[in-house]
Length: 64
Image 1 (spheres, rainbow, N blue to C red):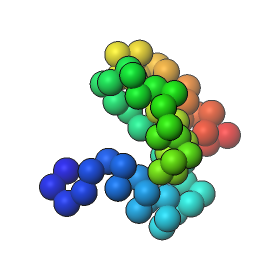
Image 2: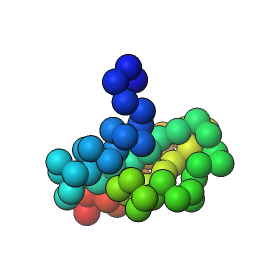
Image 3: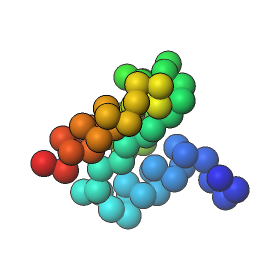
């Protein structure tokens, strides 16, 4: 991302739209369960290797 990194983007987005959930979908398994949730307004951190099914379940859960 040329103008800001993902942490900065999540923080800005949460500030503009606090009720919209943000899901961080990363290839780095070590970030799952990290301090990203809450610290920058990220509602969930998921690992790409865990698959799209987990992402779909997470998004459905956040929207319900």
